[in-house]
Every structure is written in structure tokens, then in C-alpha cells.
Amino acid sequence: MGDISKDINSKFPNERVKALINIKYTANWLNTMGNEFLKTSKISNQQYNILRILKGANEAVTVNMVKDRMIEKSPNATRLMDKLCDKGLIERTRCENDRRVVYVKISEKGMKLLDKINVDELGKPMNAISEEEAKILNAILDKIR
Image: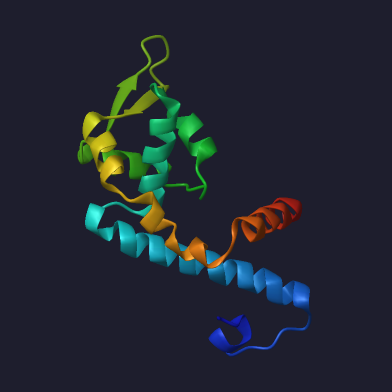
């Protein structure tokens, strides 16, 4: 079992500060694990998040809506979508009435890629906690936000 104090060789003034650092450290660790897992699919965590958003939307949605729903808010979301478009994983269309508005949707190729990604394997680190512990953790994280 990990101990943040030992993992980063540090002491903390109190448990709240330790918890804050632990959340940040764990989030970074999970991101690294996710990126390693997705490397074979040649997409990043953020690109995976965009594909999941578009799959869940079931229709073309605005780029701004995708940005709003992203887990990791990113100033380069448009660039991420450009890369997904270049790979043929999403499709873009401009609004006929307002050329400033761009719609995006997941392509068939993007759907096939998502189908190949084993979500259970991606979420494997979370198997270390029970459903009840996950429920408690979610409640605590929601309370912090």
C-alpha cells in the first residue's frame, strides 16, 4: 500500500495539506497510467475523453460544448480535435448560419477505436477499492469541489 509521505519523501504540516498533495499526486499518477495504456491506440487521455464525449452525445455537437464537458479543461482542445480529425476519428462541419460555430461528431473509425479500448483495463487501478469506498471517495471529492 502506498504512502504519499514515503513516495515523495516529504512531511506535511497537517492531514489536509497531505490530502491535497495526495490528490494531486494520485491524479498525475492515474493520468500517467492512462496515457501508457492508451499509447497503443495512439491517443492521449484528453483525446480519449473527447471521443467519449462525442460518443455519448449521439449527434454532432459544438466544439464549445465538448470543451465544457472535458474532464481536464484544456486551452488546446481545438488542437486536440484537429489531431483527432487528421486521424479520421472525428468529423467537423461548420454551421451554415454562423460560420464561427463548428460542429464535431465521432466517426465510424472513432467508434471502432473506442470499442477496442478495454475500459475495465483502463480503470484497473480503481479495483484497489470497493464500491462502497468508491462511493465515499466520490462524496468526499464532490464535497471538496
